Image (cartoon, rainbow over all chains, first blue to last red; front, side, top):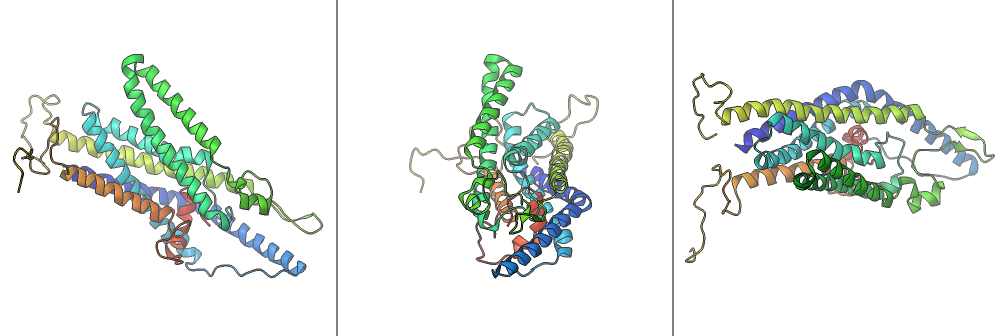
Length: 290
Length: 79
């Protein structure tokens, strides 16, 4: 029985990832290319500065996959498999909740779980550690950045689950509306404390030692020995567009999951529960234990 | 051998037991859900993290470079 829901959720996850890829390919890839071009130009300027100062630096990593592969097949694979993974997490949560609350309509529950997934897995961590295009991010801090990002995702998901449980428990005493508000407030407080305690990316000791005090790793203007700007800082519009499209792509993926799976789950659940109330006159054939 | 007095589940795994207490420690349902959960988390790890901060295949960077754009775009730290 569960397997039918699981297959559908995984399929819908793939579909969501595919739609998010199409969006990314059309809207985000030009800005990803802008970011990579910025990085190349900056590296060239840095190299010229180093040469002038008599410093030799190591050569860059050899290219494994061409940009053509990365921006087509590569990002497609990544988005689709991410959709698949989120479909899996989504359906586990959906099945646990639908057994606990059989009275909830499948499409309502599916929409709620997908909304929670979007907020918990992506949006809340994004507030502290937003998505960054290529050229932003120092390779020497990749471990630190991954650790704090995954910590933020974990805290966000756990806090969201706890908030839902707390809201449900409090509903008896304060009423549904007030209990929901209290739970939301508790969630915001917990998340705020976590965000205040976790370091800003620019504040890692390695970054402060090498780049000075900045909140982020976004490249600042490159200065020559005379203090004049030889290469500009990272273009703000490219950064904004990249992040905006990142959010929209996740919204596309999660809403596909929630809405399409909701529709499929309605049909599945309708088959299981004989629709006696919906069509009392119709001949109801009891479905075999499916 | 089942010791005398031990409670033994008579419900076959996979039979629907809504509203009943489950006596069998592992049901088909739990296996499905647990399996999907673990595989999904593994996939999340390989798409988002592997060959960056931690790497299961040493210094190889093929996964990282192949899904490079999506890793950035999905919000994961990269490079």
